Picture 1 (cartoon, rainbow, N blue to C red):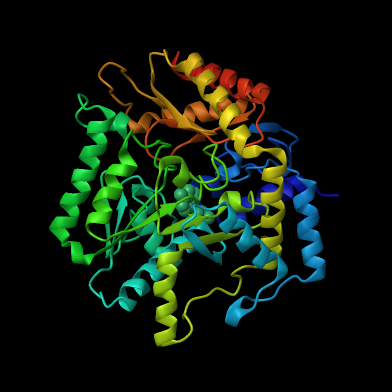
Picture 2: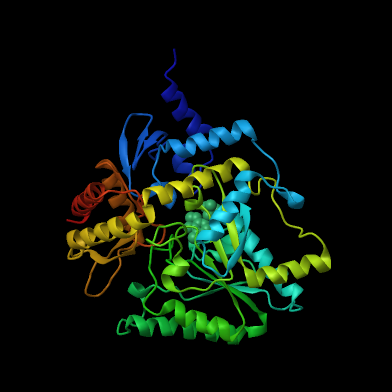
Length: 457
Ligand code: PLP
């Protein structure tokens, strides 16, 4: 009998086109490939039997941890009772209607409706269309440009890849596309003028945003999109006063705010939503990952009541909205979402993200804060990062060709812990499942310290 594991490896190299992967290196077998077989709690196990503590919860998404029977049972029951029905023309299922209600019960109080999609990317595509539709209904056809931030991550579709302000997601794809613009990232550690305080830097971000709006013409700017905590761009919490300074500018020029809470929604910051955490008052909120803890693909655009009123006016004037996916509000995914949100409440995971997250970040700082090559240890709730530098005093970064971040992530993996080398800069990111215990947090910290020592001394 052939060894099935060997077949899998060959099939993987020959036929599987992986996202965000060096295509040639993978196909030629130069990259270590890993086929994952099972997951339990914060651990995953591959087909070779190697077990790893997943300190990135997949892609910051398996928030309740792996192997939750309650969600698996809900998915199985929905699949056998009603695997599918669409949501067009006012149709729904018990699961999708219940989930919409549960989301609005948890969302900031100005929000009133949820449009369901399947990924964070398609939810942000929906947001862009809703913003354009909104301004057309209001008779403002010129007000269409959307401002994002450099280092923002909002997906990798054509428009959402344009919103994303990371080189790798745009280079050679002819992105960004009009009418997307970018402004300064709220990245305090990387600020150009190092004499600035956090408040001064926040004011500087707001001034740069206002200058861009004035240069383009306020009547052409429809919306601003931002993650409460910059995620894939480096895991960077906002500097003090950032969101209030930005929102003051947006209000002045009647510009909508989209809070992209694909990472922060449903507990990651130790609060149900990042918007509440940082005092943001968005018109739209993007949700995905934590909505089902990735047990099934589901996303959403949460719409504020005031925006909803304008959308309703649009369909009163023009008929049914011409937007929808076959799998919008898919009942199996919605059933996973209902069970997931129930579990988050039952296990008190939002509170655990706050308390164990604080313990984890403190331990990370104590273990690595004084290391000669660790320039910054940052985070909030259950998300954190360390940023490596060649020289701390000069804040001189390593040459990217040295691949210091990937080397540390690889050294951690050898020691049994998965962290993520973030795509731009030598940054090691952590976003463990929200059910992390203090013991597990301590394991992540000691493995990180060992790996940093092994790579950088
Ligand atoms: N928005 C944010 C903040 C994200 O972090 C991501 C993915 O990491 C997305 C949008 C895109 O989501 P998806 O990969 O499900 O399309």
